[in-house]
Amino acid sequence: TKALVLSNHPHEQRGLLREALAIALEHDLVTSSLRAYNNLAIALNVTGRDEEADRLTIEALELARSRGNVNYTAWFAGGRAITLYLEGAWDEAVALADELLPDGPAAQGNPALASCVLAELALDRGDRERAERYLARVAPGMEASSADQQQQAILNYRERLRAQAEGRIDDMLD
Image 1 (cartoon, helix red, strand yellow):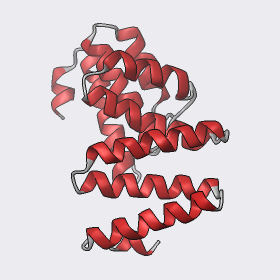
Image 2 (cartoon, rainbow, N blue to C red; image 1 turned 120 degrees about the vertical axis):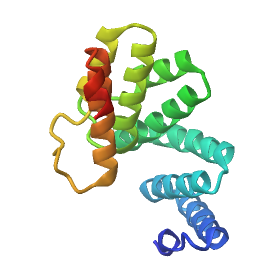
Image 3 (cartoon, rainbow, N blue to C red; image 1 turned 90 degrees about the horizontal axis):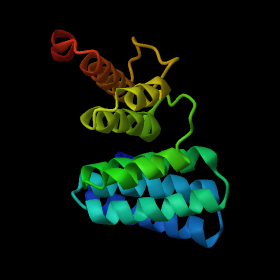
């Protein structure tokens, strides 16, 4: 937890997170390990260490899957699918998401954002039906008035994609 407030000290932050991860893995504390993987991957992304963050995301995804943690599996699969999309590995991103992201609603973070990214990919490929399926997963019960900036960004992204799918150019700009 201390590492999370040390954003102005990235080396110390990463050191604390690496040690937390090592201790959690050593003692087979799965949930603590997955939390440490997530926080360390974020810290690495913020400091431009994307390849290392992606490697940790893959390790975390494997741990979450092997231990049956459905929530963290979806979380890390969403993050990995986004990375694959950004790298241009679109087919791999779709295959991973179709295998590991739940068909049900995604209200926050990586699973919801990945659903938007995959909807955009489907629209770019001209597959409006598939795009609608991905968008239907995003936050059906999420409050449009939420103070959570991440949720607001995901909702705005979803609405922009819906406007794009429906050809409502003015709404896309809004």
